[in-house]
Length: 331
Image 1 (cartoon, rainbow, N blue to C red):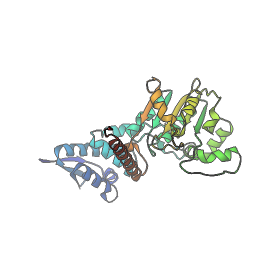
Image 2: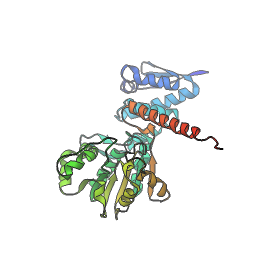
Image 3: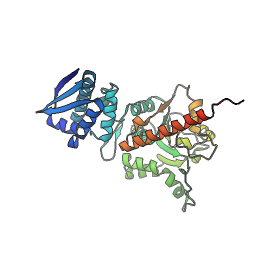
Image 4: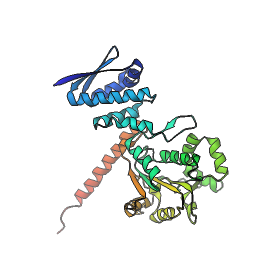
């Protein structure tokens, strides 16, 4: 039985929620199998009772976001629709209130998915946090934002950013210049995030003072890192011995975030990832958190989310197929 629910929205809120050429409202209609119409500021939602209820709850939550001045784009709208379908529309506005810090241009940095929110909360609460998942889930960027906030609040005296200098599936050949010039290409993603959040001038000034250090993982050996916020990026490309070496560098007053994607290991054939081993060895230690992201947490272009999901499906089919082919009885 079809029903219709009505709610009043301002013209400005409706413009944001409906989107250019009603693109967002069409997505809501298709996802919830309802019809949404606008009559003089009154929004009517018609369809099955349960679907209408979910769609109307979503519209109200989106209206609250609109009044706060939040941007509604393809990525945020797709995630909001997904949360609404799981009856979690109310969680959308909780995300909007958790601002970590601001970029140099004044843009707030905050978690955009429930997975990201749990990740940020774990970073705040635990001494060591592992963020594991596909590209585009904000693992490194959010960790960087938390590090810069802790540094500005004088919770730590320095920031140390590191990653293994492993080529991503291709040989780069000989790199000219001094040691810094040779390792910079591997560390460029970390520089990019720092420039955006802190600003190039502040970053360079703090780097010259030794308060911010960006270095390859090999440079961590033999050190003890006290009162620092340490981020190990691309941890899937560490060996088990490298991961153990890194984790045993941690000193008093330090906080550590380890990020990586177990599906993008660039180590040589037969090599075991230190990130995978760490997940098995350390999972029962209280002050260590493991947060696993899914394709739902991807906050880049919506197409990236589809690409991640397609590769997940392909790899799962291949694994299942191999198990099936090798499961026959041998006499």
